[in-house]
Length: 221
Image (cartoon, rainbow, N blue to C red; front, side):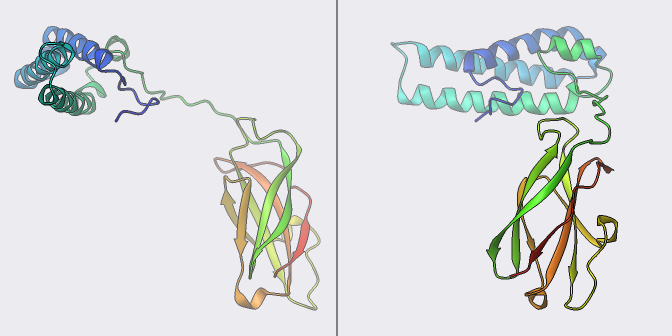
């Protein structure tokens, strides 16, 4: 089944209308678009079969379980053929952007918006998750998770054995991992239980990092 977010229409009538429009354009431009005659002919036949099957399934006199099954099969073949043709012929030159739009398809955005370095500052709230694990939640101090630049979070931390001085600032934290979750878990080694872990966060987007958040500390369970 086609998803609503997909380019392929969800209703059979819309699928057939798109396919019939493709047939018209393919037969007119197949030489310019590099589509073999046989491919265009085979697709035309599949479209015609789907149209006939839909008509039979909607006809009160001809509607039977067999006709309904044949209609489903015909539209599965139509979807498979449409997706194959789009992948093999419609997503590359010599088609122009105007050609792609004329086929009721979206032009791929080759110039994504650059959001730059994130400016938000965040910190962590920790909670017990399990043995040798600490759960945490991301808390925004400034900015908002809705801002486009705030894609993910670089969690920095350092486990400090008894008797060792704690880090003076986040720059001394030695280990890190990246997550896009606002609620996640840090697993620790068995021998880390009972030690203190010191943590800080930087919002991260494509390798660009925002300002440090304040360090927080927690006892590893």
